[in-house]
Image (cartoon, helix red, strand yellow):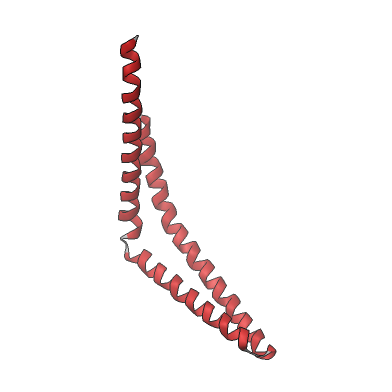
Length: 112
């Protein structure tokens, strides 16, 4: 009876170690399949540039008169739509990787 109680803490430690290694594997997969790709870097740069353009346009529309403000508001809306489209592209890129990570983690935890 005493030996069974002694094994339980080691089982918990083993479970935590397996979970931590699974997380590291998932992050490694993310890095290899998403963050190290040139496509991801270019998308991030385009999102950052579009965000800066939108902020600049918002600042300009705040000081512009009402006629120019309407034009600036349309430009802000256009920038927001561009950012939304780029975010969708980024999410699509990450979804593939998340699916692969999920399958790998499912396989790892299957053996627990």
